[in-house]
Amino acid sequence: MIRQLRFGLLTLLAMAAVLPMVAQVRHVTTVNPQSKRSYMEVYEFDYVDIQPQFPGGERGLINFINKTREYPYYAYKKRIQGRVLCSFIVGIDGKVSDIRVIRGAGDESLNREAIRVIGAMPKWSVGKVGNHAVPVRVVLPIAFRL
Image (tube, rainbow, N blue to C red):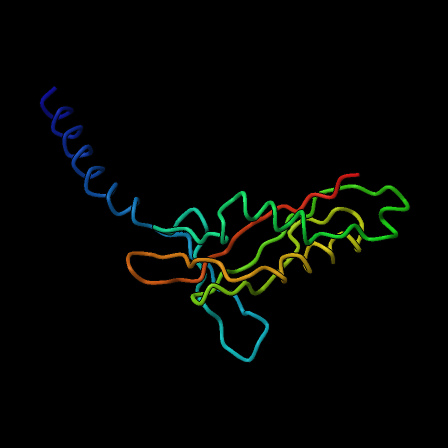
């Protein structure tokens, strides 16, 4: 009985020592931003202390997408609808780069339009870990509905 109690207490103490270290783990990936620069570390959106933000917040982002998005003629004529899931990096200067389609809408013209809209975005406020600005990957769906 005492042996089991001691083992349980040691296990509990070990877990208490490990939990703070687990909480500090950040999801960081390395990407090659398709330029002459080398690979860089990019933080995931949910794992930074201060997340990057579009000027005007979420409402401003929705308004920007709705004003900038143009339905491609062929997709409109064929009544093709869908949602394009894109990812991009908000750099330490707030600029959007490394735009990629994660899951397309089934029509290449919708995918290209989603990339164009994201590429036209103004600078975002930067993401931070502690007091340091860091590049952050953002995932954003662009919907095309008739």
